[in-house]
Length: 114
Length: 114
Image (cartoon, rainbow over all chains, first blue to last red; front, side):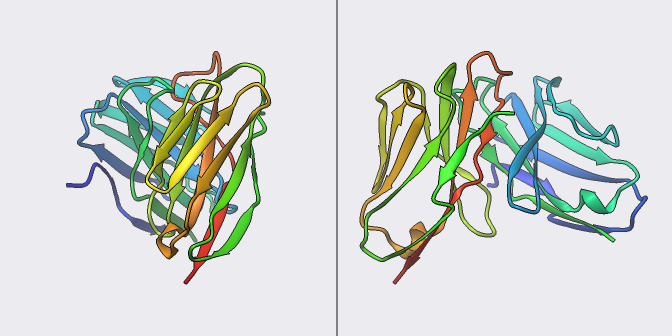
């Protein structure tokens, strides 16, 4: 059983389109995260939710909007996609928002904007 | 912006060699330090979460030490094997930061040659 899953794994789309990436965890965790891996493979936090409440909201364009329908899901919606949005996006979860808890990462979604 | 430095950036060793690399972080206001192992085409996996000065953690042939007063952590791999080839990331958590907010370094890429 996959602990943290993301769909789709690959996403190729045109500039200006709107797309969503879904994340689900079956670990019973109550905190979930979205990271962006930039071109230099650097992991940057974008958002985190704890019990469906937004906790971390880094400086990202407001075209990016996370949505957490329940504790097990955190989706990422991106409006008006731009070339610079091309990256690998990782979802993660942890038992609680405590920074003492390790984070479990999904397999990543490679987004390519043409 | 927090400075979390990892060195070296990359490392090539022969099978059987022991190796170590460094994560440097601000020595003031320490809360926690995470180590993750990231194999190519996979997702990061937690190795250790370290919280106390002088902490030593071990998992098989991999161990880590922590010096919060001088702001560094070492990761050691004894008798490296080709399957140890991966990027090793550290992530610093300062005191007072938002729960779950990790500041990642850029990683040390280890290649173990058979």
